[in-house]
Length: 564
Image (cartoon, rainbow, N blue to C red):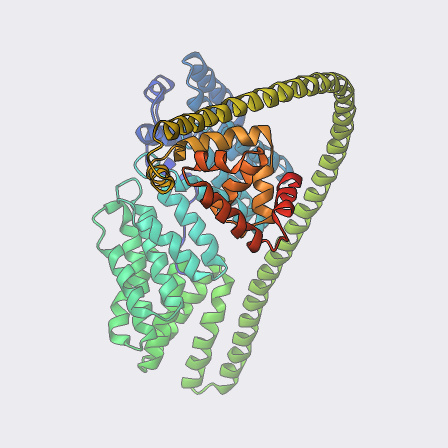
C-alpha cells in the first residue's frame, strides 16, 4: 500500500505553537468543536517538555486549574493525555498500559464529556492493534467506536473523519475492501476543512487504492483525481501521492507514456520529503517501464534507487515487487543466470509475504475463537452465579410467601364464610322479592282479565265471535310487558327458560311463552288474556306443541312443563 498515515495525535501537535498555562483559560467550559485546536496545542506543550517529571508536574497544574474552575472535561483531557502518552511513548509494560486504557474508557463512559469516550476507544483499539497484536480486540473497540459515531454530528466532533478513516484502514489491512470502502466513503462525505483535509484526502486516496486492488481502475482514477483537486495546501503531500497512484493505474493499463511523468513526480517529491516507501514504489514501476521501452541504463538506475529506498524505509515486503523487475532486467541484458536467481528470489519473497499475511489471518481467526471461548466461559460463570443467587432468592421468597399465605388463608376463609352467608341471605331475599314481584305482575294481568269479563257482561248483545275479534285487535300484553315479565320469571324460576330452549330447541317464541305461562299454572283463559289472543288460539297452540313434541295427551305436556 503506497501511503503512510501520520501518528494519531502527533500530526496535530506540530501544527500549533506553544501556549502558556495562562492561555488555557480559553478552553474552559467550551464544546469540543470550539476548543479542539487548543486541546491539541495543550498536548503539544506537554510533549515538548523533555523531562518526564516536569511533564507530570505541568499536567498536574493544568488538572488543578481545571478543577478550580469546575471544568471536568478539561480535567479528563489531561487524564486522557497522560494515559495515551505513557502507553504509546513511555514503553511501560503492556499489561499496565492496557489496564489504564480500559480503566480510562470505563471512566469517561460514565461521564460522556467532550467525546472523550470516542477518543479513548480509538486509543484502546490502536493499542490492541499495534502493541498487543490482538486484532479481534481492536476490531471490537472499533465497532464500539462506530456506534459512538452514529449518534455524533461532524460539526460537534471534528475528529469524526479521522476515526472513520482509522476503522477503514483496519479492514483494508485484512483486504476486506468492500467494508473498508464503506468507512472511507463516510469520511469523505463530511465537509472538508483545513483541520481535516489531511484525513479526507487520505480517505480518498485509500478509496482509490481499494478500487485499484479490485482492478476497477476507472473508479480508482476518480478518487485519485479528487485528491488532486483539493484546495487546501495542507494536503499537498496527498496530491503528490495520488499523482503517483494515478501513474500506477496507467502502468497497469500498460499506458507507459502517461505513467512516466506521474510516477516521476511522485518519486522526486517522495525523495525530497524523505518518504522512502513511496520513492521505492515509484522507482520499481519506473524501472520496469524503462526496461520495457529498452532504456536499460535508466531502468538499472531506478532499480538501484528502489533497493536503496526499500532499505531506508525498512520495508522488505516491497522486494516481492522489485525482484520480478530485476529478473526481467537481467534477462533483457542477456544474463540468464542472474535472471533465474531473481526469479527464485521473487518466489521466496512472495512466499515470505504470503506466509506472513496468512499467519496474521490465522492469528486473527484464533483470536476470534479465543474471544468467543472467553465470552462463553464468562457467560457460563455469570449464568452459574445468577442461578445460585436466583435459587437463594427463590428460597427466601418461598418462605416469605408461605408465611403470608398462612395469614392470608385464615382471613380469606373467614371472609369467604362471611361472604357466603351474606350471599345466601341476599339470594333468599332476592328470590322472595322476585316471586313477590311476579305475583304482583300476574295479579295485574288477572285484573286486566277481570276487566275484560266485566266488559263482556256489559255487552251481552255482542256475539262471541265479535268479542274474540275485539281481543285480537287489542294488545293487552305488550312486548315491553313480556320482557319485564320474563326478567321477573327468570328470578323466580332460575334457568327454566334456558332449559326449555336447550331441550326443546324446535319451539317457536310463542310456544316458549306458552311453556312459561303454563309453568305458572294459569288457565287457558288467563293465558289468552295475557298473550292478547283467543282461548281457542291457546288450545290450538297447546295441540300443536303436543304434536311437535310427540306427546300422547295434554297431561303429558303439563307433566313435562312441571318437571323442566
